[in-house]
Image 1 (cartoon, rainbow, N blue to C red):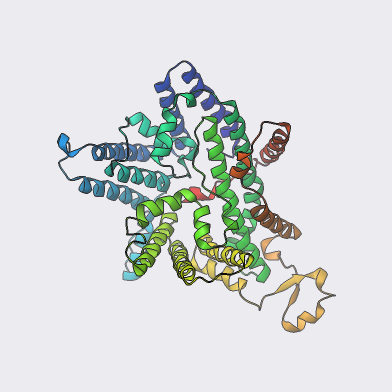
Image 2: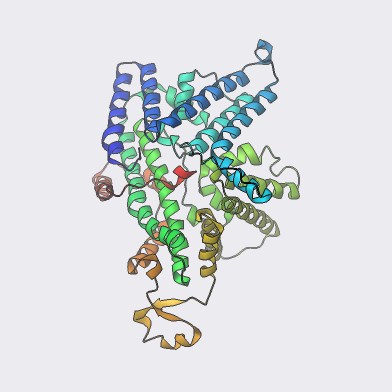
Length: 488
């Protein structure tokens, strides 16, 4: 079931909302929690009920281990040390994730290196496994640190399965969620939260179905269909994916935040206009904020962070971002993408220590283009696809200009410039240029939904904007598509 589907918007969400608050109105608070867990599991199972035992087993296992870690040694509860129990818990989670997500990748590379012919397992990736695994690993570590309270299994299940953020984040922390679920005033309908939630949801829906899905056509054509690309087509392909990914994933997060607000739950902000960043460190403080927080708190800092000298700091940065690349997908292109970002952060750190400064506009241009170029490896299904796009982006041997410029710029033919269908391989026309301009205007000059929501008012202006964007979005729901991060 997708957020951008009729069955979710007009059936699942309203039914879940009204029954949840009806049960709370009748003071059946435990029943309301149980219903929300049931609804979340139903939402999850809609994709494939075969995934249900996996998430249930994972929750039960991590709850038992987390509860054990939370108890004091003096109670005689443990047969093993807490550190051993934590190691076992984390290893089990990583093994589960590794089996489903990386086993075929591992076998492929063993076959490549050894010349063996081990058959692939062709395992289907369970929905959201990367997200709920990281979320529960964080819970285990915090339990080991004695930073979690005693929760019953119902409360823990609600923390893991809460459907707005279950599938693709944000990656939430127990300390952010548990107190909100327990707060009495959150069990009563809050009409301001409802209005704001619907407004944020509608913006996210618009981002997805109007903007992201429009760019998706050209990104797919350039990466997966076209065999050759000219200079403009290559840049248009990379930029189309850069915009598609942002508006797709941030649109999902906006919808998740908006839906959660209907239930009086505030999810953490996951995006803060990342394409406005003027350096790579700032980009990662703005992009997928909850993942960056997890990588910092549970990988980078435990490795030593910046406390063990400059060289060790660089190693820790590289290791953290390579692991971040691996988390996103089982492929060398993802690993290389993580390597590039880790390496760029080490360069930025060195650059900052030296004290060099550049103009703000130039810093933005360098940062944006670096991010745009590295997304090519993130998107490419194989090295050949990445080489095709990047090779054409930086080749002056394949410049094609529109036919309309042939008379005025005919002299350029002497330098190898051609005139014709300059977007023919993308099956596009001038609409592509218009949308690329719109994309730049939106990311540079417009405020993000979280900034807009701070000034949200229940007045005729916001109502009008809401009506326009929601009806525009709903009119395009006949072409429903999955969110990109469902693949991770």
